[in-house]
Image (cartoon, rainbow, N blue to C red; front, side, top):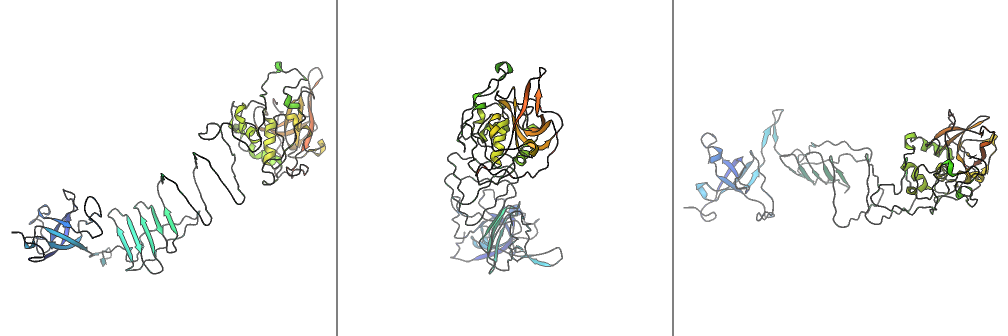
Length: 481
């Protein structure tokens, strides 16, 4: 007859876990109990040992899947009692007991986790790019409460006086640590995904530093407001606003400078008679220099220095393909809607306007090369310097046609070297003659004017001297607009 615990007797045991693969998955284990089971496994096989239930703490309900699952491993020393008394067929485990082992130095060592004994087994190299602090481990026995799974996952609740901290670590090395001063360090060795179904609010009381080695994509489905109490800097080889192919945004963005309408100027020679304006805008005297919206917020620079930065992107970046985004973006930059214009549309003056704007100089919102004939300060040919604007005409001085670009500072008695757009359908540096005649002796090309850029703030202060060295080019300029 089965005895009832508490009424008859208390029969306890100490043993070693040999099997935890409970067929009914209740967390039971098989235990070889000292003095009750033969230590020779050939006499009593492991599979013949009775299954022992494992007691969990009162903080674990142990019902309907709630609470903690028992964690015992083969080799764990445990103690408990037999619920059926001396029949010893219904063991119940109350707890486990730490032991010791012989280490590699043939010394007896505690089976307690080394982290709990004040030995740091985790090595981390701080990230110098963000100033990550060094490891704050300074645990002392017996203050560090440690849990380590058999796979190597670790939890630490360190109560060492003046060195209190929390660390949770995945075996891969991903972890977070709350340091003694309350600061938190998080490391993820793989990818990181965070999904927030509702709202999210973040307040940073000090400074924020973000380093992204790869690319950054930010998508905002609604309104995006960015407010800065101080200066705001955007630095990149190229900055596009609403580029073609974007998902969000408007195909007709509201630009800083109000847009104007400019008819396409793609015409064959048969459509334009010599001496006849190809487009009324090209000789419209109403075009006046204007300051960029950020005038005074960007340092004044020589236009040649800024143009050389665009040139450094390479000729392949500026080749006319029909819709080269680098070229159409120039139209956006000075107030047009660039997507309305193919990149074959005359863009030499558009390039000049965009570069002047970037340099903090006054510029003209126009695609007409001839609009710059009276711009800024007039400069004699013998005083030409790097960054001056050179204006040429073609098909006669009254045709409204021609070319405009920036002088490199290199000239001869018959040529001027020019950095400009729409030169042989690209952005480059080429030599242009001061004058050219046809076979009948009629002048079909000529230098109209040399102008020095002026500061956007007052419209009179000349551009500062260039900081680059002029590089001579060979050959004569190709087709221009």
